[in-house]
Length: 387
Image 1 (spheres, one colour):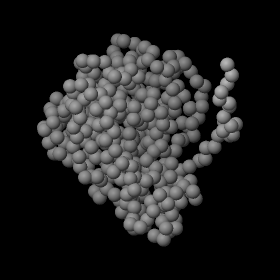
Image 2 (tube, helix red, strand yellow):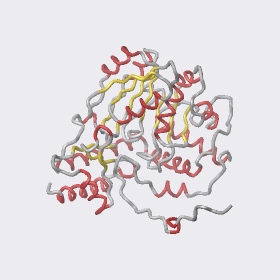
Image 3 (cartoon, one colour):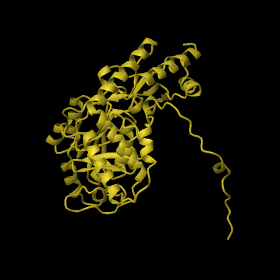
Image 4 (cartoon, one colour):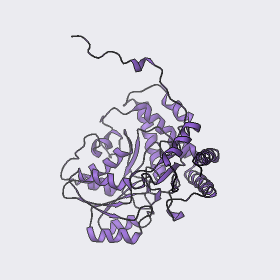
């Protein structure tokens, strides 16, 4: 036989990767230290030097989540996989999940839950607002779910959801509590154990400042007991907590067992990203993000722009949503910033599509110099529109 497909001409050209200021909703810019870690020699996925790195990652993930859960690991996939990992391990036919739906991640989590054969119900709140404890309590009382799913930082709307009181509320009603912190973790306080969170996850590409491709996740004792009580194995082999827990040596007395070939160099980067946060200290990291978000919002107000989330306490510091003024072409403004300054300012997503700009203040980009650069680029782009 002969080859029907010739070598593609595009691959004969050098790869083109410009340096941009990634101040959209993620990914954020990656530090040189993380990039250098990812360029280290590849090891085998069960070599002792690599399993030591896996153990370092577990320690770091426990720190950033503020949990002592033994079942703590990092998925070899993005944050969407972590969301699906929650649903595939905690749900099956006969189980019910209540989704606190106030944006795109409520919609997608509900979609994933339905695919498990679970009964899915939701509660909603007006776009740009968060739920009260009383609203969620009423939903739990009405629907009696097995699992409550909440998005801490809704990146499509820029809303920060308070978590206080939800864990005890769930447990008083025989319900597990799952939280998505992909857009929020590291940029605003989270205390998984103190808040009685049962399943918590995040992504590598936001505040951690690591390239996309890994997703820290942690399960409480209640959650692992619920997993062991399943009637059927999870639909996904790749995301099966039984296998994942063995590969990450999380099940007491079982030892480490091969499940999949981890993306070794990707996890080098995650390990270094976690180390950088640990060296700075979580409380300092939280303060830095708040300071930079405040600087951004002050600059926006000085330009006469209005935040999409009216309540300052409900604003997500890592993904800021700004109302597009009437008569302004939002895409032209974003395009001007990218074309002239290589600065990323994103449009809306889901319920905010065409209505807002989203500016990310996270990780390495949570510094006054970068935020000021974004403000300058946005001001120039608005002036070009005659604003």
